[in-house]
Image 1: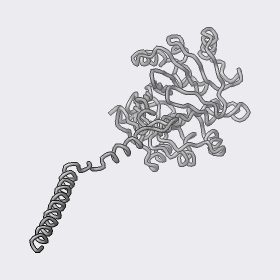
Image 2: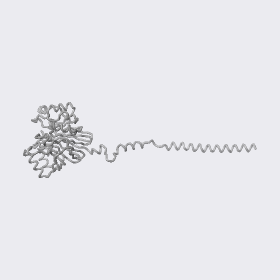
Image 3: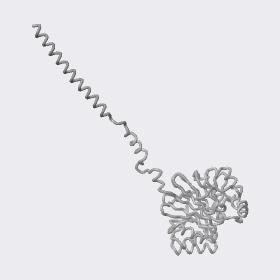
Image 4: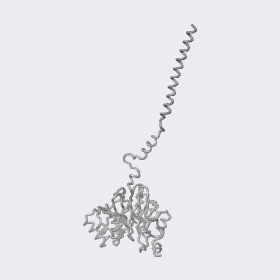
Length: 339
């Protein structure tokens, strides 16, 4: 009996041993599997974040695609006058065309820039130094629309103007008299009328018929004022149509009849453009205007110092083809050019 009991105990022992060994093998296999099949670090979190931030929602675009290249603004040196060429996405437009005597120069400049057709021209007002060169322009380039203020026939009886009107009719160019809040586009740029006096408000002063245009492109804003004087500026202020802008085209070539302190403070421009002739008889720009720009730390670009200036505009930045000028008046600049 004793011998049988001993054998039974041994069998139980052997059975427990093999069970333990079996479990140990399973455990070792589990540890090996865990070590060799460790899941990767959660790198998928990064691409998920990237997709969320770079892919725009429907109806929106990223800054890069919204800009779609760059817009170019050319402040063409036409002497004592204004002429600005806009280029975006293969479309071209002008704000003012310079003087009659500069008409050929404007045409050559446009040809050099490979302009074939103008989507529109804004003639800010019917003075020779702003619209005198328009006849040559529309005689050489197709133009779809001309924006210019409505005036009574007796305000301008000069031959150049009558000839221009005759050419516009002959070419069957659409003429629009701008009104406040009118808007039109060039590529990605939007042009909006923010200043326009009627005949009752402007009276006989052609400068105060000037169409004031706000141009927006991405985050960049520009204001082009023609020869608008303080009366127009105050209307814009009173009607709260003043955009905070990066670039202001100084009214009336930097004259002290324009660019009142309240207007400059409200616009708060970073850059100022002044188109004027060297040693012009009006002595533009005036020192009082230049002092205000200096006080406001407005960087100034002017044709009497630099000639034509080209602005390259993206949706978030502006670069210039030349360095900024100084804050001398027209007389001082003319004197320094002679030295």
